[in-house]
Length: 307
Length: 307
Image (cartoon, rainbow over all chains, first blue to last red; front, side, top):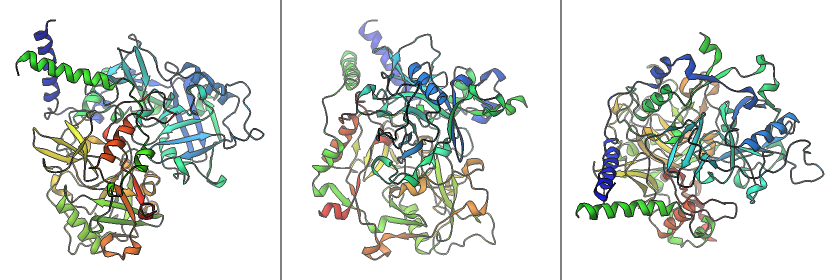
């Protein structure tokens, strides 16, 4: 391509961007898109990669992301299976940021929970090699932080061909492995969940390993901690963790029985379009754009699918 | 500029964008930026445009935005002054979206709270004319939804020279006037506050009229409502509004005594830079970018300033 050809190409991109700001013809609503979905547009959670975080208020269902953080996912499952988390607590809820579970006695060697089969720390899995073969539903409106963003396997993902990397991003409900200053100081003994505006400056700084699929409101509505960074400062403020279980270890009747919309489908692309240009009567101005963390990934009960 | 000149210009922009993705030299931390701030970098809230929302759990301080929504701000103040809101309730908390206060009996003509001096509805103030003279601290990294974003008078703002408009955006803590389907059906009798990832598709669809400056955690940690759209479905779930007051109507000793960092200062620009490239030891990858709703606007008590 010579310079003038390249110029035309660039101007085309600019024109497309400008055109995208104009009001669009009405897209179907998300409800209409989902009503028209085929059974195969939905998937069950893989019980071997589904975690149940049990609180006295109910169950939080987390889908793990072995494609992005294989060692951390394996370790969190090992820790769950040795009952490492049971009886630990939510120790931190920082408004518009994260909720974090940990061993409240982690800093007291004589009282800290012992690890038997899992690892305390692991090398970081902040990003992985760019994989062209992985299905990627790309968002058309760009991103402030990354070259390309979209969805892979139900997770919000950013990627960069130039650096040859792709990584999970810190959208609402994403679950990561807390760490100290050293990159290799995390491992999954402390887990945090994003509960505010996506803190994207954490991307590529922490190992994300999953996403809350159901029960997020049990975490997001917890009292914020009064100490710096939202830590609770009195033992009675701690929220006890009753148990963390791998769904595969439970009888099927005790699993959560939910399905998630596949993100590698035409239905999901239609959903994105319906959210870029909301056609409900309430909307007078249609944005014509959507940001990664504003794309919902619908969930339904399996019984809804069977009806 | 001929085509090749224009091409060079465009390539320069592209190169600048690429350069911005490289790690940057260390910026000072936000703490260091604030420690170096001059007294004049801070401003007191104007008591005539400050609202106190009193809950049994404490006070939420809201700064009103008369520069963007003059009629709605005047009406909300009139409603507060006739005690319209006192005894109403938080009727809706939708996870990752909004909390909303309203008259639970609004649909029952015989029981609905009567309005005496205020207005029930007003023409929309979704956007205003682009004002070149208004101070605007522009963010350098673009935005998914708008041509330009930044801060004006302490509020997150988008603007578009082409359409000649500027508008407040739905960042965390922004306060708006709920409405029905008609654009002119809002007015301030129902107020909502953003408590999740910025729902930017609401921009230019609702009149935003202020921002929560302090006490956001009293709203964001409320139980989510079980009914559709997060509405509470039982009277006992409602969170009573003790009072809404204009700060100017209170003796100075009962006002909140806080100061906000001015957004039209070099200090605020340095703060933005410190957040684009976090230099705390914890960070291994510096984003080099920042999104509008991720920029904090620091608050301090006046006594801190006096020390």
